[in-house]
Image 1 (cartoon, rainbow, N blue to C red):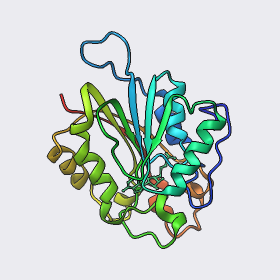
Image 2 (cartoon, helix red, strand yellow; image 1 turned 180 degrees about the vertical axis):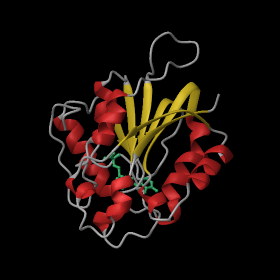
Image 3 (tube, protein in one colour; image 1 turned 135 degrees about the vertical axis):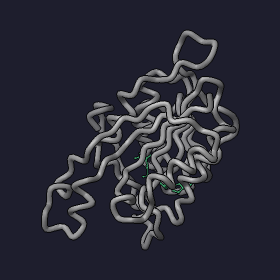
Length: 219
Ligand SMILES: C[S@@+](CC[C@H](N)C(=O)[O-])C[C@H]1O[C@@H](n2cnc3c(N)ncnc32)[C@H](O)[C@@H]1O
């Protein structure tokens, strides 16, 4: 992973961060400054940590403590393994299975599966989120887990919108209903070869795909 200057190993059935562009978003978006503190955030959550890659990026960015979760026992074991090898195990707690850990954080990052449909294998669980359950769970629980002045960072591809599986209005309505405000958005385009493959039946959607980091706040 260029953002880490190190390798991250996915275990079987754990989402592999081969499309590094979203990792770069998390590596370069300015960290929030929590209310009443001159310094940056101290505690971050990484929900649905997979290999632990985003938790590692946050720890390397100077977060004193990161709590990483996942509902997949395979992912929890994989993240622990990677964080241990990266010498970050002392600063990152991997807990679960579950979505939110206890307590509040200055920064809550979540890169949920981006297609609201049923996975057909364990390997698809990083891509397919039945009924958008994880996306809704993250947005619905965020306000109760953010410290004042904190931010939630939602990393989400809009491929589902291009496939007619979700609308932008739906997403904005869920954000608003959760009492959240969009403080900013940083976009990136896929760099993988399939995005340029005109023979792919999903070419039109893939060519238009944008992955965004949504900065969400409660104040
Ligand atoms: C797109 S992958 C992201 C993995 C990692 N954060 C990354 O950026 O490479 C989504 C992750 O969310 C996890 N997940 C899916 N549904 C979940 C849920 N309801 N609660 C917690 N984790 C979930 C999956 O196991 C998977 O590891």
